[in-house]
Image (cartoon, rainbow over the protein chains, first blue to last red):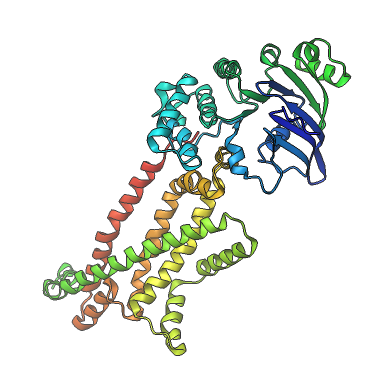
Length: 247
Length: 227
């Protein structure tokens, strides 16, 4: 039975690329305001799982409910749902031909139908929130990687999503820039945002996650609070992954 | 007569210039009209076809590729002759100007489609994903995120191709379009002197050198930093 209190409820999710089964029946529930960290070796399916959660990938089987609405139902307006599911990418994916502010206001205006002035106010507030109030008129190429990723977070946050998905948000960043992005994520968590984070930032997971999910070979091997996963992992595969990681 | 006098008499004869320069100038006006009409419809059609192709409907794309390949393979003169001399026998008569405009537009559209399409393909998948993830539709993403980037990248090759194809307006001489070359040829045969042909060449230089320079300027203008 779907958990009605869940913000995100994934059940029996399967996804194949050709003959390779990358998700082999995933069940995952994320409650409102929860920060769930998904870790695992590359190729474990964690990014695919995240990308299924706003249907950038089409799952083959299963159910994904966001705030009670079934994403895989053909009658669901996927564009309306995607506005409520913020996504942050490893490679930022800002629009290089637009200013930072225009990056944020595009969906506000074209998808939500806000006026130019209204979109601008929302956009500026979102930029202030991620510490980029002075970069509204800059182009993405003029920003550092950390600033670009914060702008990308602002683009997602401006739509006031119910949940945010982070796909390795700091993996493309130089180490000294990671902190500023994590600080923004910490602020979002403090403000009660529901978040699913695929990342290798184990220190951040230990400190900020409510729950850590370890995936391997397309399945969830174990999940639990960070103290348990990092302190006393039950499964050998989790232990060997964390050992390889030096975490 | 020494050799320089012979040369000047053959190519820059003052009496011939005086007599036929007005015709050449009229020809320039016609060439500009053809060129502008071809650029407007050819590039618009090329962009429309490339946008249509991005919907990836198999049958539609097969038709687009067929059109593009045929018009890229055929010499424009062959198409012009077929349309101009062939269509009247099935009851369709078009003016020389219309035939020239139509054929060159189709040729430019074919090349422009390929250039725009490669531009669209060169935009990273992440741009599509980022836009779609904010709730923008496929068409909104294409219009606001993909095409502006694709078009910018295609300015240099497109400018070169456009110049090459609009210069083919000289083919109008074969079907009686009174553009530069037609005027120059007529004047040459009436005067028995090559001066009008040189005037025609100068007219092309006057028209197209600024366009080439504009192309170079656009190239630098649109070469902006990609992240």
